[in-house]
Image (cartoon, protein in one colour):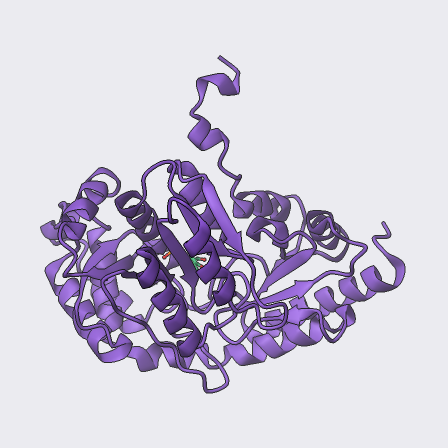
Length: 394
Ligand SMILES: Cc1ncc(COP(=O)(O)O)c(C=O)c1O
């Protein structure tokens, strides 16, 4: 005992979750403010919480439910997907959040040893989901230097030339960690490339409602596309753990295989959480867009705080709750800068290396009300000014 030799290589060789490292950093710095974790500051709708409160004594919430999700929620989701996402031929499975949805999808579609494609900067948990399921041949494609849009020409060439053909391509739209939105024509092109190559496309739509400046989120539907959604950010339900998978109804056996995975991980998402999700959905998308609309103020505050890095340093931010920024060239060790900012300026952000891009950082602006975000931005600005002017002085 006492050696990695006794533990699964699958787990040992998977990256350490960046948020666990960051939480440790936060615990070690008194009175620090976090612009690190991807969270929102609001709670679920009051009416929905009040309704759920009355349900705790009902026997059904203490029993197992249907693996694929309670009937009423699935029905409501099918309706929502038709009305809001233009998805008409998709079946739905409710999961314990979008991360579990992603693992379900990987286990359903990929075998150990398959290759898959992501784009830098990528969502770290998706990367880890591949690693821990034995899908270790992860091909990371480039994004456009300015827009960070996935490079579709590169994708076309890579899917044509890689043998065997990669099994799956995944994107987050709008993105984590960059907030970049993939416009409809580009998403369609990526989808066509995947279809022609015989490859799955998995789109994580966790931030579907987090769109700014008049942009509108869209989903695509086809027999090679899987869409993933989450209640976590939209309805302030991070801790309730509810997400869902929209998969093509016409693909024979997809649902049956998904159920095998589901039955061995959560069996079903928590029943009381699914009830809260249903009550929250009844509030309508306006409830969410109303919460989201003020986040542009936080985004502006953080954008201003990043200005010491120079005009061209900031990327993304059309959607989601993130801005992505390049540190000056002389700081390739982004984690060192993150630790220094925490220690000296009591502000915590995420190192870009966890998304495959050393020398960059991710700033999350959804977790603080405006006044707190202003205080956090002041610290970030001071820290970056010092970094640029004097370096990492102690
Ligand atoms: C792109 C993306 N997918 C999934 C998740 C996890 O969501 P959930 O809480 O629904 O598991 C997050 C959370 O940060 C995310 O940013």
